[in-house]
Image (cartoon, rainbow over all chains, first blue to last red; front, side, top):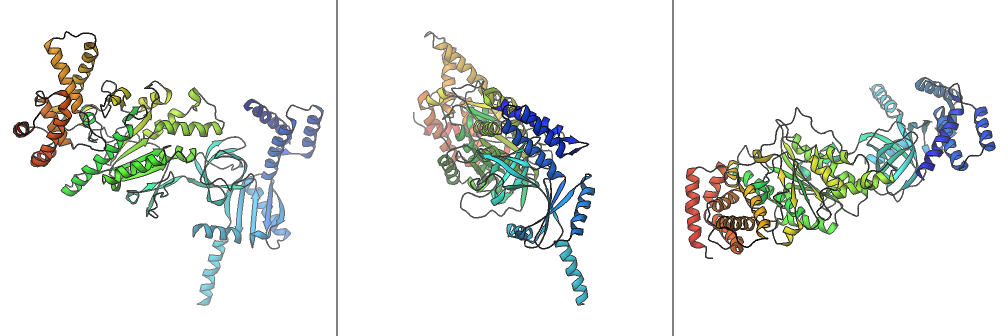
Length: 131
Length: 508
């Protein structure tokens, strides 16, 4: 069981490394990897694909800022966030906007594992926790 | 003026709307109190992580693309995909005198129903042990109140003395006796108003024990008036392994507070065998490679880093550790016993055979040792008990040899009889520690052959009669022995007079 998991991890990481061109994941390379896997189907293909998916998703999340907002937000603000994150992380970060009414007011920006929270909902949660 | 207020309010508004950065992850899988988490790229080893619903976890496994966390608290509400965030803090527990007399769990939360604890300070559970420079050699005694130990295997403040033996040999009883004795000494010392007196506070860490046993220990301490100087850290068998793993470190953090603040403390780990088992369970669920007896590779470090925290600090206080190890069929060469024997400064070995013969405490003199030696004894004890260990070892050897032959010379017979008397003299009921001055008086009487005319089987009765005689009628003499801590010619002549007087009162 342990060696099987190790094989899955190793192979998925190998495919993951092959998906990069100039330090960035490209759809062409990912397509190529998937095509190769289809032709030469490895043992435990589903598990390898899941692990590969997780790695690619984590990498994409690192170069994408998801901007959640309760009210409206201008395109200029989204661009400003993208350029600010690009400067901060030293890699190209694109911004995607998503409406989230549970925030009540303010915004939340997610880049990979990092979350920048400036919403009323989070402040209320902090207040509730401190009472 | 309103403009000024507006300015300040705007400034507050700007500050309060400042974005807060969090490092987050998501639960990938959760089972057996251990969660595998995706993300948490900034998490540090041993860092506290926050789960939804107030549960907290500790990051123990940092892997390339996942983090393994043990969860402390209720895990029934957690599910796959839940968001987890780092806290940037190490796990801390409340410390200070407010905890004395209380029973707390591994996180320092009260579990005795006596309300919240008003502790102002917290200390990290994991802390690097004091280094070489700040330490001082062990030279002050920590009196257990058990005659066999105080006279032959002395324990010093800042020492680590292992108590090892099979189940039901009286390991816990020795530690409870020691705690009770500290409380008795504290009461006498604090009442005397001596500015040089240093009380010893106790911490009893119960790991993987039955709740009924913990209640019994608590009741024994309470009835002896020792609970007010004691903190009980309880991680019972029903607790999850993460809490059982953490409990000794939490206890050590509480003990270190006393040490760092110029006080003396005693910590009992009851027991480290169950602690190792809890850690093995966590490690196997975390899929760490297993080694001998399926324990992980760092099981030695698990105990060495814990026991190294016991020390005597130069210019500060001390923390004495009494770890307990339970052996199986007296096998001291098993993995965990040998590890802990090599870490500690000596061991008190308790034998099942002795226990079944009615010799209680069942201390095996031959296998027990204190590496600190007589430097942790008061002079009076050295004077009366210096040769006891040798005499008793010689007796055991002769007794074994005498089984094969009936014709023994007079000298051997005398030695055997004397050895038998010493063994009887060291018998002591549970939860009844003897003050050191009384120990000195009884051992002096034994040394001066006052017990020789008495039949061996009546030695226990004679010894208790002598103790009663000294306690009720020679209190002034006992106080003198306690304050002088050494026997001079005057004291010896007073002891002689008292013993002669007792001899006339005691009828065989």
